[in-house]
Length: 260
Ligand SMILES: [Zn+2]
Image (cartoon, rainbow, N blue to C red; front, side, top):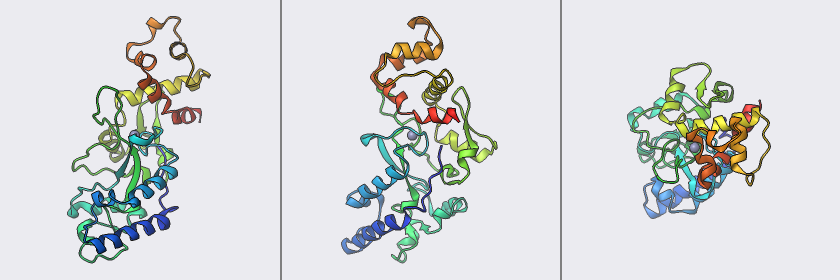
């Protein structure tokens, strides 16, 4: 996991949101996120998010590709007004953010409505980790009314969130709020643990390969096995299907992680 510094592009993106809000006034639109999505402004902000995150999902570190990219609201769009301020204690990035209902009382920004505020938006993957189901299993999935600590906005998060050799993600300070955030975002689901473990082994055994390498040979080396049959059953999908092989490659951020 990496800290995302929203201060770098705030002015540039607020200018885009200002333009959008002016358009809303002109067309008598409520600045819902759906309206934002009807304009070029969503596209332009999305591009900034992707670049500032070096094309990685803010939560799971997957390499982001076109249709898998979603915009995640750190304070959920559906957050009720009465609990909204619970989020504001964690980061100065929310200093100029208000609940949409509060914004509609004045129609003046700053502060910006949470539905379209740049500092409340990050790029995440769609959480789909299967070629046979389009159900989201992590990251930008429905959180309901659970309040979670915005890990990605804590400046020291890179030193706090760690991954074990078996691919388990955990906070080294054992803070229950961070444990809960990992749980709610489902960042320890089986697929994520498997791909992290694969990268740990690749780094440890110094296995050289590329996207076009013989997959069975790579998996045999990872598990130190002489024959394909002995590769653990749950890992056979990584050589059997393009989908899982490519998914594994999309998590190459963990090679660097396990190197350090
Ligand atoms: Zn993700």
